[in-house]
Length: 179
Image (cartoon, rainbow, N blue to C red; front, side, top):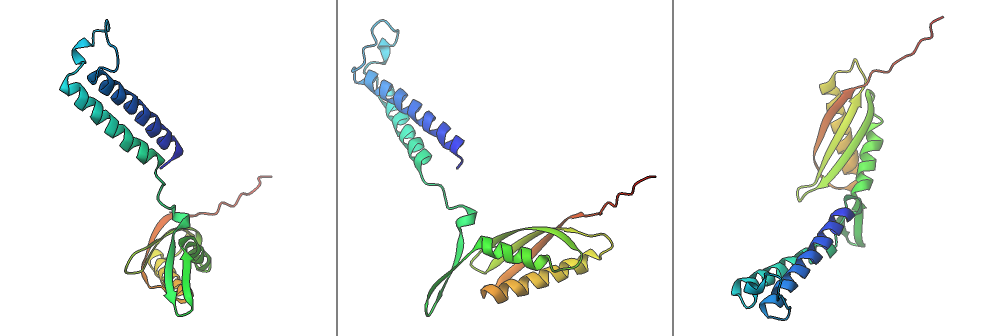
């Protein structure tokens, strides 16, 4: 959760807590409401229930706003256990492996990648910009095969699927000077 969202939730929770405490105070007649037009709320069951509800909601919002955010993608890793101990491979390391091998495929200009880990293995998503005059299905097939083989060889983890989105065909512009 972003800082701004946490801040708004924290402020909202404080507002709810104050309103709930005020209603509970009016219900219990701790707060003097004489001359305010709120005299009918004193001792009313509905006032106490509404105050208690606002207090509970305020506490829940406060806890959510202070709760620790889930671990970011950059901190996630794959854990493997071997005879000599534990091995962790960060998903960002796998992404960098994919970027490295994709640069070696002729016809691929630029790539971005995302890796997800499931119980079955790795799902690799690649967005690629390719050079013109390439047969896209064959180029993508080569990229998928190289990525799958390389990542499995380097990590020992099964690659379930390599999904490729051809994002664009890059046309290098050659500028000529007019004389």
